[in-house]
Length: 217
Image 1 (tube, one colour):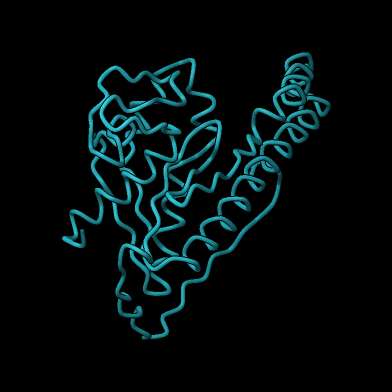
Image 2 (tube, helix red, strand yellow):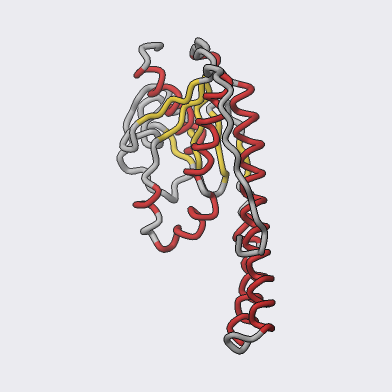
């Protein structure tokens, strides 16, 4: 690695089959809406804060990057400065992975099925104002961790399409709020008068849409 560490990976076959998928129902399924302010919001109403490891280390990163740029190219001092910068990048990556491993393990252990939204991350990071925050969240890596952990224990990952209106649909009566914008964190349904938290409503709909696809509701 850039920090001078070496890793070895050994793949061993044990001829054991993956466990059979466990049955699930509405009560044993959780919907998960990932975001920037909160890393994940669950259909149960629980919110998991986004630790934002990259954002919290930006000032230190800028200092180390300046030190690298000021050193003479090819010098030992430049190599030492680059090493310090690489160590910090590695620490941020390790923190993010540790957080995601613990959260994905918790969700897989506590639920028979987990419903998530198919995200177009490549398209989303084209928004330069949000690109850094989206990259810091690393949603794709989190979903990957959910998927293989679920395979190991016979749980199910359900995915809804990226164009499903999970945020704009009232989870109570089904009204479609076409006027909802990204800055609207709460909204009142004009039909049933329910006050919605945008993200909790989205998580409930992600769960609902996925179960409809499975003919379970």
